[in-house]
Amino acid sequence: MKVIQIAQRAVDLERATAFYSGLLGTRPLARFEEAGLVFFDLGGVRLLLERGAPSALVYLDRPDLHTALPRLEAAGVKVLARPQLIFTHPDETLGPAGTEEWMAFIEDSEGNTVGLVSRTPAAGD
Image (cartoon, rainbow, N blue to C red; front, side, top):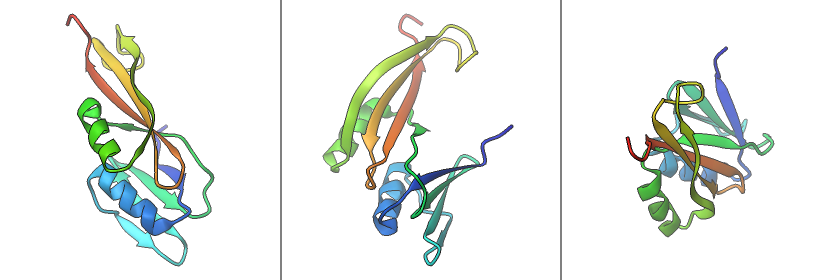
């Protein structure tokens, strides 16, 4: 089974589009203003910003987490939780072996929580 799409609530579609364009560093794939839909590509998975969607918790791969977070915060993004080590992967069960998984949480322009995940070489490797 493969994830095809993730929907995220967008109270203000224009504001949410600007936020995710900046966060992802890309423009939307498609926009359907009348229906209240905007689509982004997340490496083959669609991120749908939708006026009528419930809030969801989305985790995004952000390899540069430790340097990106201060830039996001300086741009006015609310940081809910600073980077913390969540797990060290001794094998490939949940992620690349020999890596540490770091997570931080931010609030998007619509009040949704977004997890940012970085996998770095494990300390001592």
